Image (cartoon, rainbow over all chains, first blue to last red):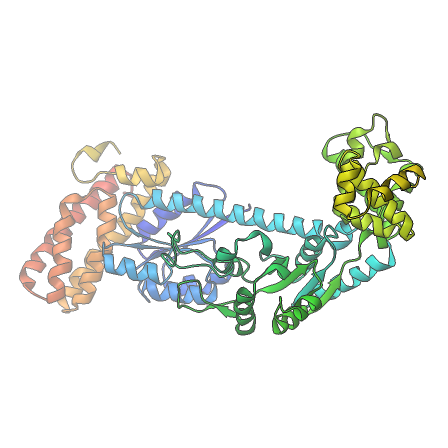
Length: 447
Length: 120
């Protein structure tokens, strides 16, 4: 940090000069001495990092000077130095926003020195946080994080760009692993709210009985275990974005409360009466078909339309064509860099194998497959034998292969025989078919 | 600085603020010599004009300076001046306190001028 600017406002010439001298012993401090409140106020435009203010000044009281400084710049910390020990004055000043209150005694210089040190540390921390946020912003420049050239993903880029320009609610849908949270972050960190918080809540991960307190906060004693007041996720996201993942899992009672908060833009914590104004940009996500959920009565129609906003439907990876290879290469490079490994390439055969697989787990699954392949290979290349798929969604694999009914039947029977150790009687019972059918298909080599 | 032992003043608190570098200490002593007698003068003028607010303010201004120079024997008299003046009671007593203070300050200033070579 460059120089730390301190104003000493003190009409006692000796005390003022001593303080100025003492504070100037640190060459990083730039100390200005003013004898009157009005001189100090004329110079507030210089944005001092700290003001040491005498309570009794010839032209106005320290309190009046403080009020006027705060009007111009409420961020400037002001320390009041008084010749008298008066608790009620101290309390008034602290309530009005004074950073601290000292009596003019031996300890003033040390206390001021410590405060300067503390404020400098705070400023440094704030600067670090600010530059980290900028770094995150650069990291989440969406073309850096959402890789792909397919027409479907280019459409998504266009929608994200539109979303970043306003505060419109965004609803993101897509299968698991398509990058819903990534898109939410990309929207936030490329919007005007980038420097404010991004708070993510996975609605399905919060127990039903705690979701209201988690979202809206609670007052001390509002329920068993509420030993202190706690701000909820909405308050944590104040000024920024709140990402509600798996919004489709929210129960109807909570949906009603959420709707009210969205409509009124204010909330009250559980067990409290105070209304808290809310300024939060909502981004929601689900892998459910919300229109269907509304039809089934699982989701409120009014809330659905409130949350619809700008809908972004993320395409499954299998519909993104060559993006599979673009992403695979990106994940290989990323993994090698993170683990300090030499660069790896992906063979044509491996690429072909990747392109033929439907990726029910989408991008998340692709990443896992590639990382495992990178570990398994002993050369500088990932080959097809290193690519293995371990999807739990066997049934959707079946359907995507577009077989005949007879072929599907055979696959199903084979699957069950493998599962139950070729126990034909048990499999026949499970599938509710005759065991002779299974024996026949085995004899005809159709399984 | 060697004459500090003659009970007129004690610069330990001043050293605590600015260190013991002679030129710096001398600069602060110079400010004291310039400003403190003027405060006493304001007190006397205020008393003569029955402007007790002026007397009280001047007394209030003096306290930190005398404290820094270790003039502890004047703490209570100055506090009395501040408090008594507020009610304008016993002006004869205040007048005597201010007179004694004036003598003390004059003695102190002369001592400082000698010790720090402010003469001529």
